[in-house]
Image 1 (cartoon, one colour):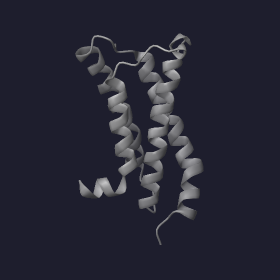
Image 2 (cartoon, one colour):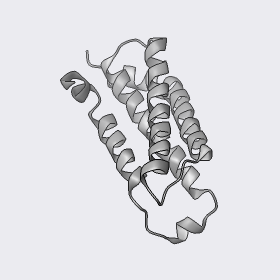
Image 3 (tube, helix red, strand yellow):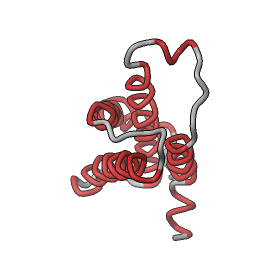
Image 4 (tube, one colour):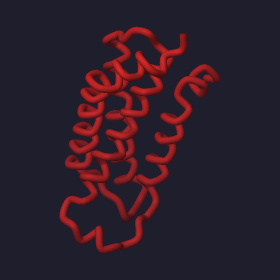
Length: 130
């Protein structure tokens, strides 16, 4: 557990923040009036979450294994699904939405592509511990 905290501190903070934001009741603002704005928020939250996860993973590892890449996709998507389910069962002001799950998944997949194509060469060149 300590190893996980050392390697992925920002990722863990973001995961906790996403959990908190997923259960708190947001105030009504003008942004609430924009159709599907919350889907954009889901995409950004989970995409950002995964980009940070990629950065922290690449900083600590000198190679990529397909199992780890799959895990970096499965974990946040599963977390999003669990959160969606819990929102519908333990809150009265949130509901399970498949479109939220889709936005989460698109964010994760986009971040994975960005992580592999853009972050991987940059991190291994400039941030890798020698």
